[in-house]
Length: 250
Ligand SMILES: C[S@@+](CC[C@H](N)C(=O)[O-])C[C@H]1O[C@@H](n2cnc3c(N)ncnc32)[C@H](O)[C@@H]1O
Image 1 (cartoon, rainbow, N blue to C red):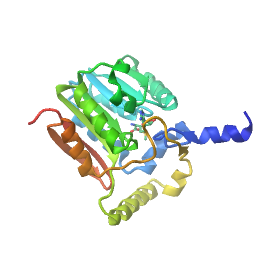
Image 2 (image 1 turned 45 degrees about the vertical axis):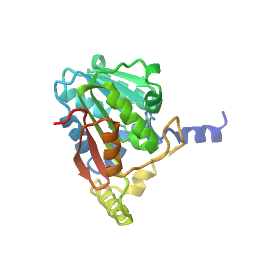
Image 3 (image 1 turned 90 degrees about the vertical axis):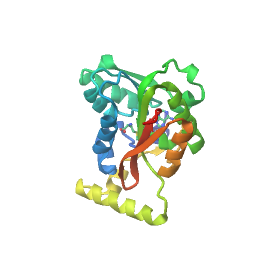
Image 4 (image 1 turned 180 degrees about the vertical axis):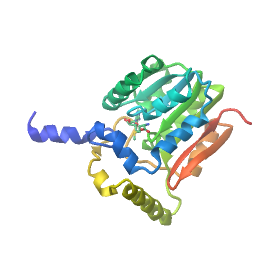
């Protein structure tokens, strides 16, 4: 492979991998997104600590998995991600933390799972499904199919929590959200431009492409139509939100 081709291959990321070098992800995402840890902690706190079977969609480098395993000592996590690079990072961090028996990483596209669940032998009857910063790469039609499949895969008391960027309802908010992110980066001793210099270029992969944002309202409507009887937004910070709900009505 000549040097030019090699360099261009290195930059072709899957949507959601974000950083050209996977090793930059854990630090970079905390500079790029305000309150990343808090956001994941909200998902974790919304899960019953007695949860046994948890499905994670788009696990990335395993940051959410690690927080969940600390909170739910009886949980087995099945973690899907289509990126072998991200899964490899997650796998080593999970093993280093001593959780290897409680976590299975599976290389798969969650859009494929939504369309053909029988092809991926992960079963159902999950107590919870979680995801962070991944589902917004699907077009709305696929988000809805995925929410339906999640609903079908949960126990009757099961819950689903997702953290994702949402589409600003007005152009004014685009500027407000941008300013908040700039201020956050400055408080971390950097700038968005500096962090974005480490971001790679992604091309469409499977069902995911660059950001396909929907408003928070659209998400909640889709969840209701998909079968979630109780929907909620336990956290929102500017354009980022944690939303989801339970199959049962309270
Ligand atoms: C921005 S990262 C977030 C990772 C992790 N959830 C976190 O919050 O740190 C998004 C992850 O979703 C994965 N992803 C995006 N679209 C996917 C799809 N259709 N199927 C499986 N994984 C996907 C990417 O490979 C990436 O690891």
